Image 1 (cartoon, rainbow, N blue to C red):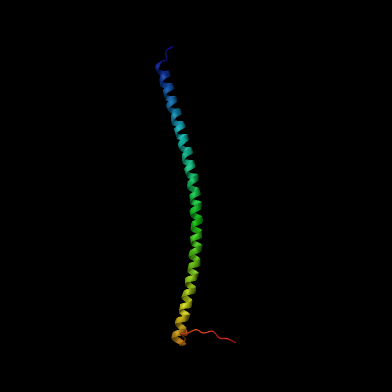
Image 2 (cartoon, rainbow, N blue to C red):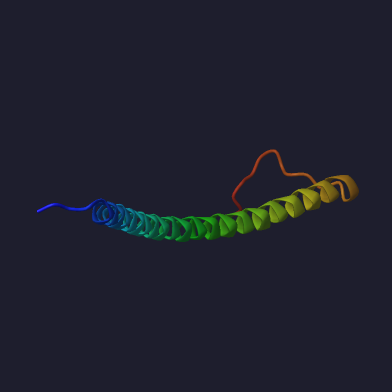
Length: 93
């Protein structure tokens, strides 16, 4: 049985087309899997960012509180001539 040239070309074209379809399908599956992994990482990083923003807010509040205490101390020392005692004793009733 002889296969003529047009049939040979048709079979080889179809097999190359099939290989191309399978290859692109596998690439699509791989890209979708990678995308799911990246979305998972994005969620983790956003959660970490939220935690860091909360910590920054707490630290900013603490810094403001410390700053206000220092300004009160400075005002008390300069304007009211108030200072911490050198020795601290216990008062008994």
